[in-house]
Image: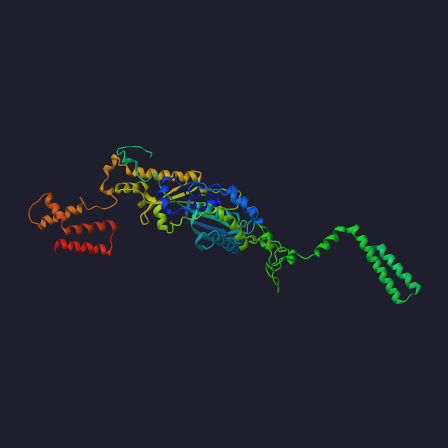
Length: 203
Length: 330
């Protein structure tokens, strides 16, 4: 049986990719830990630019998707915080991000707006003297937080790259927190059981 | 131009001199004028050709007039582009309204060009993009529905942050920080190993949630920090199972929990019971063991242990009071 999801898949082998959790525990325990799939970027720009304008390229895109035997990372929670100076732009961006998540069937657990920060400065208005006359500036930073849950590594990579490429210019910044789940493998049993009186520093 | 006018006036003068009828004059005047205009047309392109061609183009209607209602908008704005007033068929007005008026129209409006627009990300466009992206996504395993199941199969959680912002550099040094969180109950630790682990780890352990957090930021890359955190966890685990010879010097002050055996409280109680001669005569260890096995003594022990470990509370004090009353037969 195939191991868990890899990054590039062949479309005719979709059926054997999705395996139940019954194979998950011992299988992943046997593997030497998860490795991140880091090969999307070479293919992604190709597909995104070509498949919008022409429909004929899609067949070549499909054939370039391959399944690898690498186990996929799992993200229990992905939290996206967008910062900007303009609340209207963040509203639009939130609409875009939530719609994209729904289209890609990603569960959105929470979308909320943290309170804004205002940084104020009071400076002297004149270059020289006139201490009583000042000018005040303020910088308003609005936030928007989108929390997604239960993402695989491939889906997270695809979604985050799509989101980040469509970030509006300058006004919005993004901070992504990812929590990955893992299974310890060499921490299952202490090595001292076989050698009770031992001073081995490593496993 | 001046010579043309002179010629026209000469024509007029000649007609007036001849004494022709007004209509004829008018006709002549009209023809003279028409002649002038036709000659003007032939002459103008030579002198200022570019001006006339530009003026001709302004008369053309903007692209919005020619757009059908059911057009493919994703073809008009396929990628992020500034706002083009003659390509967006919306009657948008933006800016501060003039006195007794309305905000300025979209034609030549800098405010509309300045702000970021999402015209390339309409719902239709998003659906198209996601259709193209779907083959690269994988599904979440259906058996891991709840967080409890995730914790059971995957107890270690690794947190890290990515930063995207505009600036001279893409990199953010805070992106290398890795937090590794694991519940100690999910690790294979016995009593001694757990206590030693807690002592080794110190502040990184949270008692309420039973979560050990290891934060690494000493390496320059995230992968290195992650490997270092896993290495630290491995070392902690294996070291806590080891029993060093100097651990035998652990004193009562080092103990994490209060244990009643061999404590001053137990000694005091036994002395008191022996003096009260509750169980009759006879001394020695057998007597002590017999006393210890009595239920009142056990109750007293439980109440004292609870008070010492959990702190003072109403119910704990009441329990202690009941236990003391039973022992002293009040």
